Image 1 (cartoon, rainbow, N blue to C red):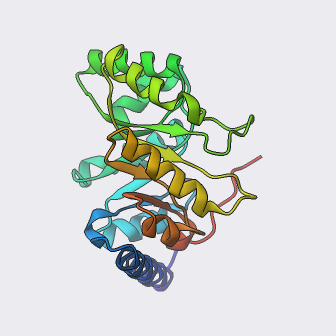
Image 2 (image 1 turned 90 degrees about the vertical axis):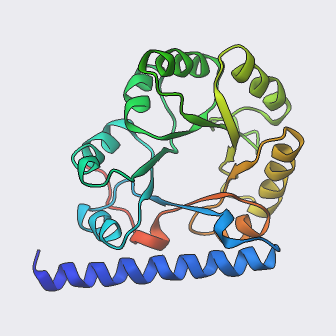
Image 3 (image 1 turned 60 degrees about the vertical axis):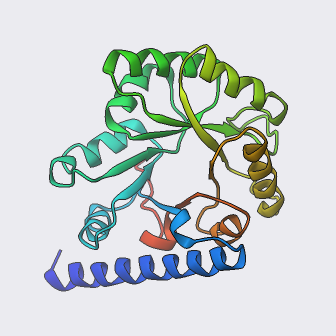
Length: 234
């Protein structure tokens, strides 16, 4: 890659970050909120290294990844140079990857079943690394999608805390693709409020302004920052 290409990528990423932050500020104002109360997570899965490095060079430090192995390959070499990195696991986690995830990530956003909660609690204790966790809620009750059914969330959060000692800080959702997202966002925020959970992770590139207006504390934005993802090899 030429220096001209690198410069163009750097300019594009910096501009995109500025645009997204401005949109967050406008949406926060519409909701009567402080923009500083919203954490922007850059979804870096399947993105070329040049774009990731451009974001880092622009001072951006909070990233979300879906796959533990891919995240390790990307971030382990970079972590020594960026000690202020904050990595969020935002994809499904297999129990046999729990230790690897706890060692790499700083926040686990996808606690979605009792077996995983138990595995994470055990590994966090063994590694002496008690990470903040979100419970993933299947707001659309889609049978093919991960997450706790809304009617089971209160009991699951209680079990995560009392039985496993997990630090549950909030709720996370991915609304059904065919639904308008706003009702799901309002539903998740209301549920979090009722459970006394201060953090709500919702909203992606297509709908994050609505999520912010409705109370998101974390938004997970990929293509609006980095551009279209690079397809995984077959």
